[in-house]
Length: 347
Image (cartoon, rainbow, N blue to C red):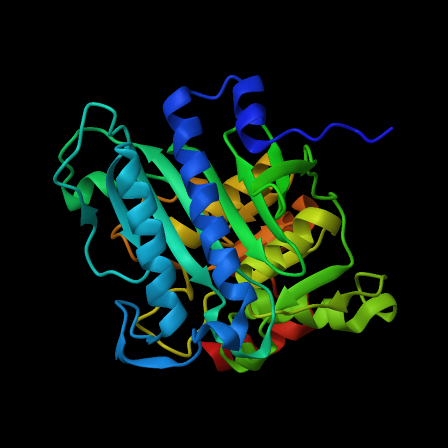
């Protein structure tokens, strides 16, 4: 007998999620469905190519980036539940003139993570983060709140199937899109990140720019069973944060996008408010950990809405391992390790 599947709306009701928050999450699910339908048509939908303009990040926008941004903005604006939004694709916060007393939330989102993978048909996604709005009319400083104050976070991943993975602070749960019935059904309840792992994900092309603690960690992983860690590691790197984090949530691992010296004005590569914070909440709720290398990600007090930050996230023991290497390096107590005999080269 086939097991009855629980819809997203039913799940939110069963878990006593605030009705306004539940409605907002259902609207995000609708936006994700619309983007999923768009992406699955690929070149048939005339969505490929770049535009002749850059977003606030200094990145050339893809046609699909702009379309997905418009979809999210329109769907969430229509709910009347949002006091303001921050998008990766827009310089300033998005404000709404026709707000009502139900406009209780701030939403941060990356409408299309991994858009450079679209042309080669690799999994991409959308990331979102939800906070309570402190007031109806928000100034830019009202958006600068630490990730620990998130009331919900999640992502949609557009791959062989479309999934929505969310948390409202009561565990991390995955829903798969039933295209026939146009609804997300619970397929991965209470996702858990294994405490230990033998997989890591990092963009190795930046190795020469890494800080010494990251070089040490990755060198030890590469040394495998013959090295200090005494076990073999596999390296995985997709180039889409959503896809890499989804793999970690389903089978464990550690994802690193650390601070480097390649661009001195950028303390990190990923954005705190709509990439690092929501992923940190999801992974922590699944038993994992997320850090800058020097402090818990969700404790970081943001300085501006598009702030970049280093991130170390995934299986708890491995994240803690990397944190210990940073602490030793910062204290100058790392001399016993041969790798650091060359440390002065990087200072």
